[in-house]
Image (cartoon, rainbow, N blue to C red; front, side, top):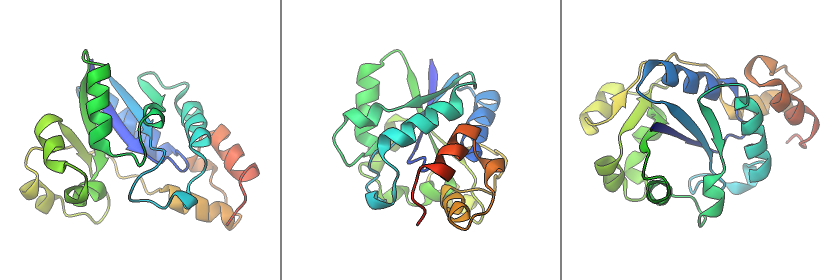
Amino acid sequence: MNVGLFFGSFNPIHLGHTRLAEYLLHHTCLEQIWLVVSPNNPLKDPATLLPEEVRFRLAQAAVRDIPGLVASDYEFRLPKPSYTVNTLRALTADYPEHAFTLIMGSDNMANFHRWREADYILEHYPIMVYPREGDDLLALRKRYPQMQVVQAPLLPVSATAIRHKIAAGQPVGEWLHPEVEAYMKNQIPLH
């Protein structure tokens, strides 16, 4: 099976994530997309993250009714911090029947050279890149000609903006699954 791996902190997961994943399911060769909740991204401050179990449960709720999307806590069982190359190797060993494709935004691709064993990943796994506003796709294509750019719609939302809106008492329901919105509004202390 062709499986797309959409890694993220999902802090929180929002409709931008799920709509993009659905778009990729319907417009590419991917048969399933696993939204892999990263417990400890080495490029993020862990103090700013909701607990990993909460982020996973919210991801499960957000994809529950979307065929082909799967919330995954696979990285929770791996050493931390979470390095994509380690996860890819482990997944390939555990699921040899699947062909894995890495999914990332052009903003992450612009920093790909900072990733652990980036050359190994490029050599062994296809990468689908969706555009993010303001990123220079031409420069990225020159640097990484093997990446596949998917012209997915640009969605003007981010988890950071959602957290800030909640803290300011602004509505966020248009970008969150109802269960995620309820949790974010009622369960976390607002900073």
